[in-house]
Amino acid sequence: MTEIKRETKETNIALKLDMETKGKCNIITGIGFFDHMLESFCKHSLIDLELDCKGDTYVDFHHSVEDVGIVIGKALYKELYPLKDIERFADATIVMDEASVKCSIDLSNRPFLVYDVPIFGKIGDFDAELIEEFFRALVFNASINAHIIKERGSNKHHIAEAAFKSFAISLRRALKKNQKTGIPSTKGVL
Image (cartoon, rainbow, N blue to C red; front, side, top):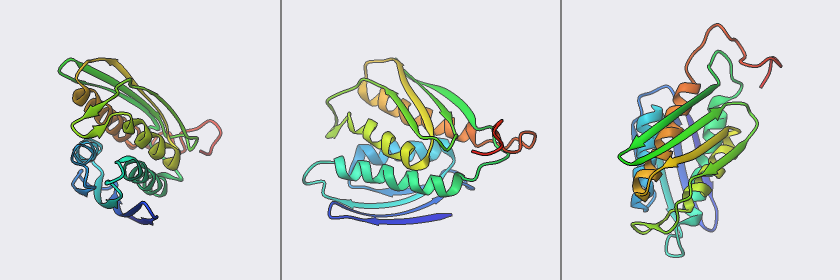
């Protein structure tokens, strides 16, 4: 289990992350839609997460969403590396009614994000473009290469949730044990 605390003038975050569990969560960010997305992430990645974020949501949700991405990413980094005996590469396509989003992951210890999920405007009171900010903060702090691509869809809630679920399932699959590979790299190190 990894514990991280992050305190800035904009947010105060306490996090506990455990990758050896069943996807339980206790999430409080003060942002209902974001809490729902993080709960989906936990459920489908099978990662336990306790998260308490007090942010300057009276300004907007940006600082809280980005800083939560940073702390989840830092916790994942501590849990992930050094990697060995895992699949390393994985992908998942998630459909939710008319929406379809694909995520491909490489646990490479080289961060990169391709985010092609063009949804804008509000989902409830949540700015849809903050989803990209969250994933960018997470993958760069976790040192993950992730490509998240919208294949189709019109309902913003469905598209956003499919993005979180496809990332979660890709991560779960990439972490699957593979005793035959050792360090999953021809370089011998990640």
